[in-house]
Length: 447
Ligand SMILES: NC(=O)c1ccc[n+]([C@@H]2O[C@H](COP(=O)([O-])OP(=O)(O)OC[C@H]3O[C@@H](n4cnc5c(N)ncnc54)[C@H](O)[C@@H]3O)[C@@H](O)[C@H]2O)c1
Image (cartoon, rainbow, N blue to C red; front, side):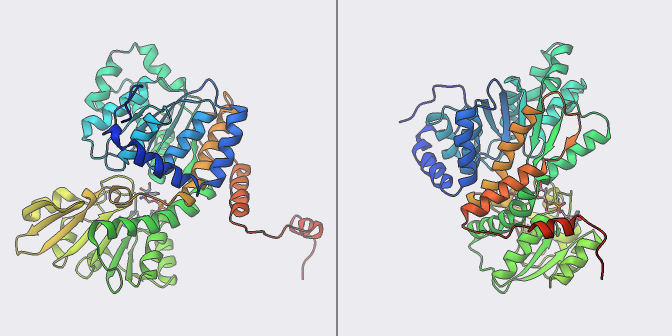
């Protein structure tokens, strides 16, 4: 049996063989990332960099981690969500790829933050975040706001000198951010004048959110719901809260499976888009009594609250696929319930209301596609993680020239990733003729 010979905190090293199989299976569908790994192995663009990555520990992330290490990074990987870790993958990364991993599926809050502390103790000069928990901790430390830290991080931070606390953030060449919620938090830090390191908004690259958020979340969210419940989607009223990139993907996949899809929104333009895409659009108040399955993908807080749960029909199922477990006001549901039966089956908690109606919460309100299923398919993470790897390389090349702001991924990276992805899919496209290039750059020619 595999044993850990490097510092780590994973569930069970005996799972490593299974994890390795899954990592190699995902690798087959990640040709763009594989090409980057081959080049990184030769050129070592990340050599000398201590890197901490706080990501969902999945088979696809394992292939990103292998790519960063091939590029010369000294990497530590920790979980970005307590329920998203694939324990077999974590074990294999330690046993087969010698990468220190701190992540256990179902870890409690203390373990989650102890793992974040392990990432900070690595004293990274490049970081990668999915939700900005790593950078937020660094900023609280740099600002001396130790009371805002979880106790697992606070104790260590308190032992540092003031200079070391400041250096934790200022030593970072750049931090890549993977998801919408993380970018929102980082922009809020920039607005408040507290962002003390350059951030690259990988989520905002077109090769990321157009595909990962839409097709990845769309497919894997329904996969999570089905694995958790065995529900037949056809004929159900599926209420999708939020018609952003994730919402569009989720709504269209549910429609494709025969659901009657209802969309709720707060943005009039997105609501209009949903209506013209053929979905019924209404308020959550109206949707609550008629929905069979509710899926939140807004990145917002308390989107489904007590008054909505109270109106739901018997047997309604509710889940979240947005980043944090704040979209469902579960404490308000608990107040309404006369009985709570946790885990009536894996990933399903039953809440029995005063009049006997039952409401089912899937995946404890955490992102259902990673809690109950395996997250996005490798093919789509190929693009997200190729963009992550290239953004990391670019930010190191730009070392010292990037302000402490949220930066976009260079357009050339997006174009390169899309071009290579098309090639690997066997798709060729047209190129502009010289005449077309001139025409598109001119204003003189009219009717
Ligand atoms: N599950 C996953 O694997 C996964 C993958 C990518 C992103 N995410 C997360 O999913 C969330 C959504 O990401 P996105 O890229 O679609 O963001 P987005 O900004 O494109 O869309 C969010 C939408 O939600 C709407 N919204 C906000 N508050 C609302 C409310 N109270 N009721 C109804 N609609 C509301 C907004 O108007 C917006 O249209 C984020 O938290 C993001 O980090 C999850």
